[in-house]
Length: 195
Image (tube, rainbow, N blue to C red; front, side, top):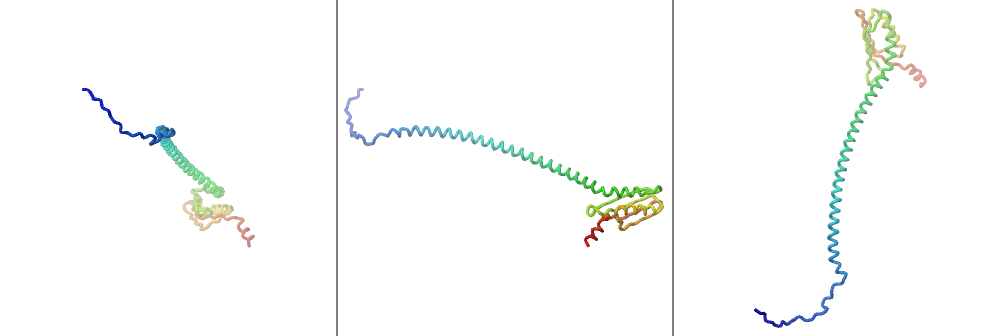
């Protein structure tokens, strides 16, 4: 079959310069669009990498903070233990320092014993509230009260005054109980100077 040839009329009118062509600058719009997509992909990748680095830094910081907290707790525990040892050492030092005034007293009592007398039991008690008072319980192996008089005299030479003394003699043993208070020998002179 053969197509017959006919003439097609072109009804299109000549419309010259109805819309001017795009300026050359606008040809850059697609290029800018594709470049902005590429930049967005690059920036998104950088953001994702930086986000991962920030998460890792945060985890490292949390680990370091936990480690410092453990070290701080260990240091607090060591400090508490050290303070307890210091307190014990201070208590022992205070005890030794507070027992120094008792040493001359014990020595005086021991030296006051005669050849036929002996100390069976000697107890000196001090209270923390009133350390200047000493409660003395003395048991001597003797038959006479002369030994007690000699011992009380030696105690008085050390400026101790006996309050509420009691003595019991029986079966070759003399028990003496008293509260000793140390008297400052200069206190009377100070009181007279202030009058």
